[in-house]
Picture 1 (cartoon, rainbow, N blue to C red):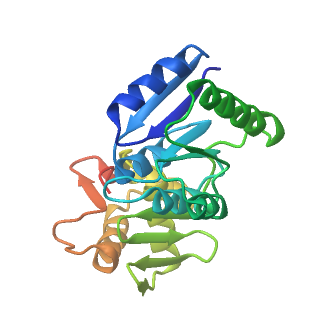
Picture 2: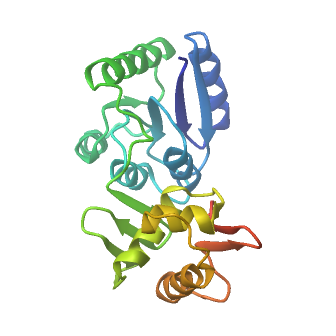
Length: 234
């Protein structure tokens, strides 16, 4: 299977150069030019390595790395134009696996990523970014799967068991349309009873708890005549 890496860097020219270089090693590459877009791709995709620049628009590399480490053990190679040793220390302490200072030699870059991918796939039993995370984060919404606690910003939201289960099921299938039957059978663990009002009631309560404007939902979207979808845009 071909390895796939994610490059998060606002230097478009560098991204194109690195893409050409890794393709010669039979590695495919995807790009994101902002921290926010990079985090979305990291959450949704299956990568064997993430190359992450420190200086990024919207979210800096350290913030992105912290969020990535909340749901994935994928190797991260950090890039920076700075030479300060504190940046290297901060990156490694935050969970980076390796570090390169710009400008760097392309051959050294290739050697580093091949080593990280080999170590990740061979020694770590093929752990992938698609594994079930311990925490899901979307804009101001955070879902902690270990404690079953939900936060909107700094505010803790009290959800009943079924409300939490529905939210988790929708969120982990972000962007996918789920029918009422799928939701019912997943959450209640029994054949669908055509009790649409029950599901609609739980969705309504959930929206009142987590949505900034329950009448114009940000997170849980209705797909008319089909079911619900957790927004891909958050």
